Structures are given as C-alpha cells and as structure tokens.
Length: 185
Image 1: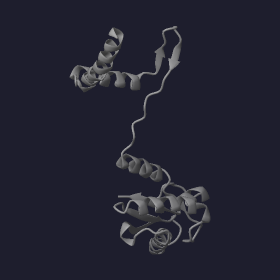
Image 2: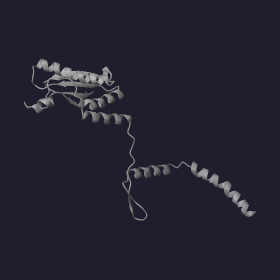
Image 3: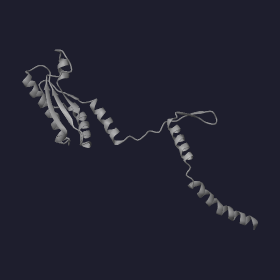
C-alpha cells in the first residue's frame, strides 16, 4: 500500500515538473542554442568521442526571390549576343533556345526591360547599315513578342557599323560585328 501511494505521487508530480521545465524561457539557454546552431552551420568537420573525424556541411540559406532573379539575369547577360549572316536580318535557329530563355525571364519579370541593339559590319553605306541593324533588332523583338513578352518591355535601337566589337577586314571580324545584343535596363 505504501508503494502504491509513492507511485501515485510520482505520476502526479512528473507531469507538473515537466511542464515547469518546458515553460521556462531562459534567455541564456536560447543564446546558447543559437550559438550552437551557428557553430553547427559553420563547421566543416567534427570529431566524435572515438576520435574519428566526420565531415559535415553547412546548411544552405534559402535565396530570396530578388537574389534568384539577379542570378538568372546575370546568367542571361553572359549569353546575350545573336549573330547574323551577311546582309540578313532573320534569326538563325541555333539562337532560338537562348532567346526563349530571355523571353521566359522577361515574361516572369514584367518589371524588367531590355534594349535590343542592332549592329552591322562596316561593309555598306552608313544609312544602309543603320536600317539593317534596325531590321535585325526588330526581328529579335518580334521573336520575343511571339514568345509572350510585352511590347512595353522591349526597346529597339540600331547602331549600324558605329560600335564594332572586332576590328579588321577579315571575315571573322565581320561575322562578330553582324549582331544584335540584348541589354537589360
């Protein structure tokens, strides 16, 4: 009977003690826990009680939508030049996937704008090259609009032969200068 009373007392006291322990809100315990979490994230190796070293990685922080957008934009800006054949303004099919990536980014980010710069090599008159550069930029504009990009997000400008990227009178230099460039604002 005595043992029965003791057991009842323990069963009644145990939940009360547990609730009191859980409800304590000690700021030093929270600071210690935050410090432990930070150390766990920064640690790259831990030694166990047996002396073995265990590699651990850091916990990756989730990126904000703005950070993701900036990374996507940086990737697109690394691949922003479309080359054209001599005296042509039609987009070569090998650039379709690249242009689709730009279009997808612009559709997903309606606040972004792009300027399409049309360029030519130095063959032809300045007037003809300005017109050809504009036709090249407009063909890219049409492609992007057909992919769903709003007209208000696109601006077209032609530089003709004024801004070459390659100097010289070689076919290689001419080919590099026959281009359209997507420049994000």
